[in-house]
Image (cartoon, rainbow, N blue to C red; front, side, top):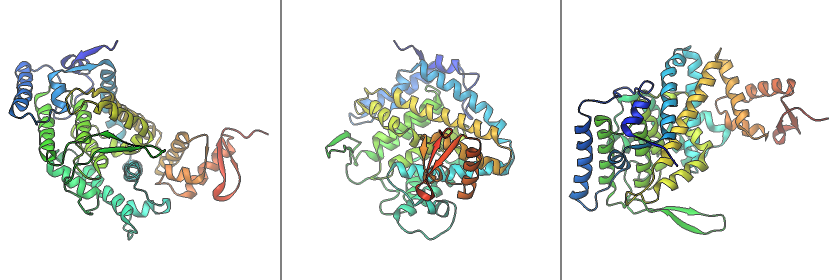
Length: 402
């Protein structure tokens, strides 16, 4: 049996720890009026047109019951957000290392999830430099970098609007082809199995209805923040789910959804994405991402879906990122020490057996020379050992057995 709390109870439960900027937690005197306003708008939208889309945000507003597991995530995130200022007051030079590393990881991971890759030796030149680009993949990775810079630099000043969504798509697709334009043809999400079988995993909103669906989604997001019926962090995840189900673009929907996630976090004062790549954490948990997305999208068109698997997944991603940020920021002593920490963290995430190329891929902002220094130190401490020579050499965790 799953214990659920009402929306008001969930907010009250986490009230002391979760206070997003511009969002006052509590029980306002006009609470009932607010709830009825939002719910009446939901009913009116349904009456106005049988084709009107019912967003997850409006469904949660009508039935604001929050699972206990979600409440615990909200509480943990509230505590993490309360401590983030302690870490962001550290030396600017030390934090710069984390920011650069997160920028590279985000640009690479978010594109790699969609099958867009770049040669490891070109990573820094493409993401941080101004080198001439060789192909479309490199163009899209640099384009995503430009979109990230826009989100990071403007923070909460960047409005959550249709204009912003189209702008993020145009940048992340590097102004190529239909970048910045909604899909012109209906497109479903197709799954291809290794044996060649194909199935439609999800039927997305039709091209004709897409502009209206995005408009309604943004309106629901604005209503949620203004009327305080749904907890704002839950609203982020719910909007992300709806955006992916609408699937407004021919290509690049996943990338834009992750940019929106980052931007919305800034709006609520959760700045962990500046120092730890949310995209990389999502990539590391990619199987769970697709699993929960499929679970929560079943029955979406009819408004009978269960959003909580995907909502909890995104809250887990944020919690994991904050834990990693605290570990990295707490261990910083110098910029060089920050890079050592990144290599050690990457080794911990890798399997028990790995190659140099795997470690370079996991710590793209660290030079090969620095990686070798860390590996040699761990080797002397009998924490890892090497088998073979050159690029084909295998590194294994643990002490070598004689």
